[in-house]
Length: 113
Image (cartoon, rainbow, N blue to C red; front, side, top):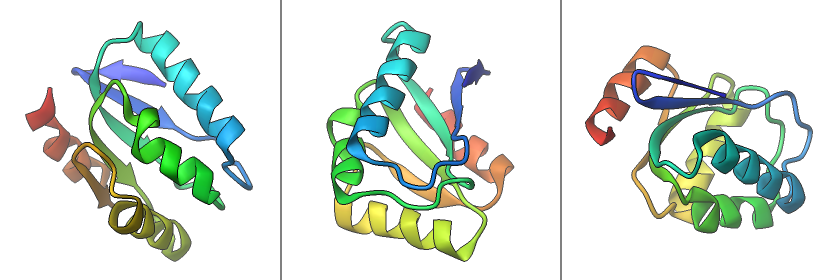
């Protein structure tokens, strides 16, 4: 995690299954890091393998506190499918789009600073 030009960059390590417990810890770590300040967020999910339904539901609601917008960075077909599923089924409470190009994602996020 780091903040650059008013945007929070969040890069997940390789995780086989993102479950609710891990999701809650990630949000807790993020809130501590940002000192509860709200930011637009570039979320790199390239190394994630799977999300449980509970983790997706959490990230779409309570886990999005302190995030003004999410740009989900993906690369593989699997992560693209997961991101699309999350956006269309879980319907996050804040603006959320999927990107394969980091620069385009950052450009989109600038409007939410």
